[in-house]
Image (cartoon, rainbow, N blue to C red):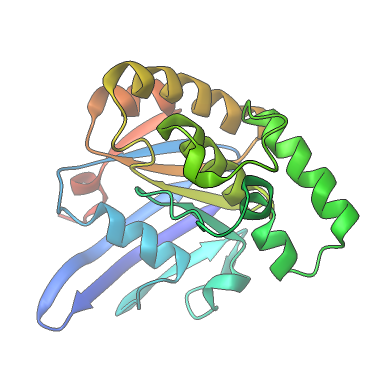
Length: 211
């Protein structure tokens, strides 16, 4: 469903990705494992259209999106630092993408309520994001990324910054949420135990290179 073929990304004279390829089946959760600074996040950003591609291609559902703007790729992304909007409530954060897409207010509220229930935060719509715990903020970020029903969800070390006990609990819970909604996902991590716990398949970034 997601097909990355011989992707090359250069920043000036620095080659970050050099012919990397990745295939992900519909509904599959793939963990992308590699050391910090190895190019994992760059690969996600290239799939999302957030960094320019020097060569190669990205296809979703058999159609190339290599030159398609980010907002038209049907790709969602969860960042390491959540990137919640501090001036918006929990519900408005989750519904932000729906509002930008022109979804009617009633439908938006219904979808937000359903998603907050899905991530275990029913009744949180009116909460101030500044008052959320670390785990709650991660769940809100996940709900926001799922709201527009992306064809592919990209998660860039989404549980960074949590204490180990909470991290280990959320790994299991978030993986269950993703499987429950049937989302095709690529989950980037440098933690082999996290990768094994969350994914249907674990791949190493080095193994995606033609060498």
